[in-house]
Length: 57
Image (cartoon, rainbow, N blue to C red; front, side):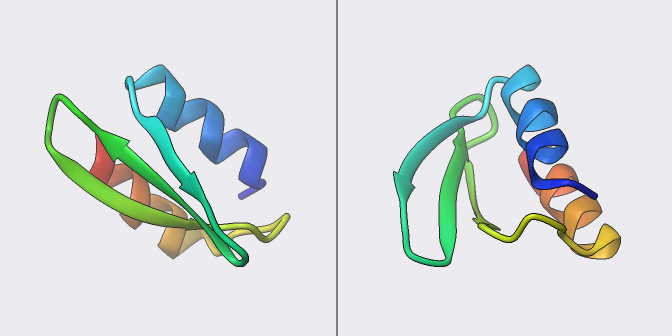
């Protein structure tokens, strides 16, 4: 999955960017109270992307 597509999904579910890092960005869903790191790679493994979406939405 492309990173920009994953970010669009997260933003559509009201997730916010907490901070930028060297290799990961930290996103937080205030409605659910969960936080997950998102890799800064152009392509993200499908399994990892699905887990991030499941945890944050």
